[in-house]
Image 1 (cartoon, chains in turn green, brown):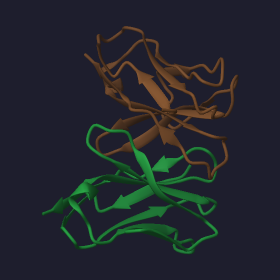
Image 2 (tube, helix red, strand yellow; image 1 turned 90 degrees about the horizontal axis):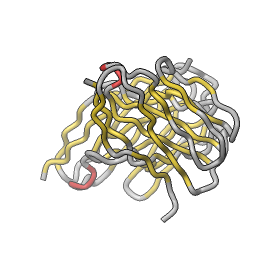
Image 3 (cartoon, chains in turn orange, red; image 1 turned 135 degrees about the horizontal axis):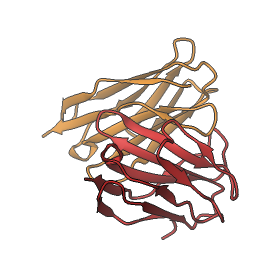
Length: 110
Length: 114
């Protein structure tokens, strides 16, 4: 099955700086890579996703890049704000079974 | 507001007891999923259903069963709860079982088995 590894497990950034989270996956047939944000005590919510036919996607301060050859994808958050503090999960799938990374706890320092 | 609801919000359960976690969605999504979330392990798929009347096993199905009698409901049953099933359980749904369909999550059920 698919194995997704996510790094780092924790990330502390100064407000206004950028945050980068990296994930690798094992199944070369995976074709969909969503990112979820989970605030404390809340449900995971999709923030951005990318499909295997696209190398990069951007939505305001959030961008995701995908390198299919190397089997890794990354989340980039620019101009971080306190409300960006949360746990972020990457995931990968080639079917309907999403495989999640272990999560990255992001803390934005004011 | 359309979406997914789960019940109960939280539950403390004695080991050996039977428990059913409820999940209902009103988006007419065909596919539904149950995940458990444990610290440091992310979310792991327990069971899924591509459409009403069909179910399948996920990554960690042992000790759990599901049914999908209709489109809206997807209950998860623990026949005889054990402490290792202490976790936060999330139900999710997607429009279809296509690999690129977004999965939407319910608010979760925090279950403690003593």
